[in-house]
Length: 413
Image 1 (cartoon, helix red, strand yellow):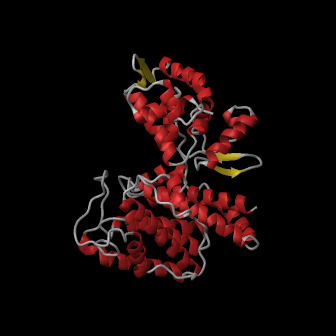
Image 2 (cartoon, helix red, strand yellow):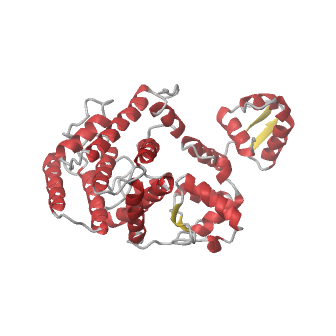
Image 3 (tube, one colour):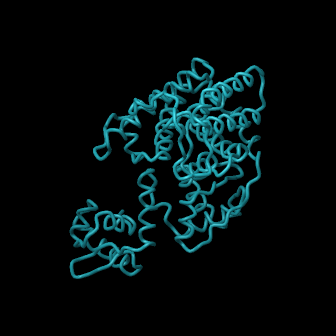
């Protein structure tokens, strides 16, 4: 069923005045839908999202409408159904959820069925982390996209401050459940892994500016269909990162510890589309685009700092048993240390994620994706941060791990 947002996007993307019949065809609708789309167009004119003139209907260019267009484009890129999210009731739900460190049905104040429907939409798109089903308890990590939805519908996005170390008990429970389930469900687990890794590749490279959509990523990596509107380099970047991800998975299966060589090899595989840089330590200064406060190592110190990082990792391994908190704290340290060393001219962040995933998985903590709703906070805790904060990153990693475990366990159950 065509909605006002579908019609808005059709007009805003293509521009220029258009007749109703052209819009009907552009939306691939039957001629019988003419009157319905005409009514939608008149509604959009009434709320000033488009204008009508003697030549037909066309977009109304202003800051507010451009922002709405960018929000809807974000949904399309990430295969999110914007018609499910752009709703007054969803905005109310989110505005109340942000005020709570965790929440249940009573905290939101909606009918149970409506609450369940919205919760399901948010969870399926990676915007909500369920802590328990009975009674229902969840968190909605803040990100600016959801905040913009709240603002668009006239609410104020106030956010609760989170304390650290909140999710260790939840993670322990899910880890114990995972270990029970995986024994009899290995085939199903491999299917889940395939879905997760494709999403991770899309999410990870979207951070780095690759324009591929999630739907295109699935077609490229699963169905081997190359998108027509992408550059050769963008396509190769996705294919190479999948190869690096699969190498990481194989290394974990072979129980190979991290080493300087494996770190360089992940980069070498992932950056094959840039052979002049692939697997090669930089020999000049670099800066982080968009963050002048982010300090990276002098290029002459990179080799020695990598050696120190690997030594500290090996020292950590020599202790046979680590508590969950120690493992996650060390994962945060590895992540931030490698990124601040910044060994390469390009591809440092995507390599860092493979290294951290390797470390966690070899310690029997399954993590295969950073969900969409946590991507922004993750970036702000890493290369987007003004100063290094391993504790803050650890908080985000807890939520990411819990989301992965919950999703895997529910699919295995």
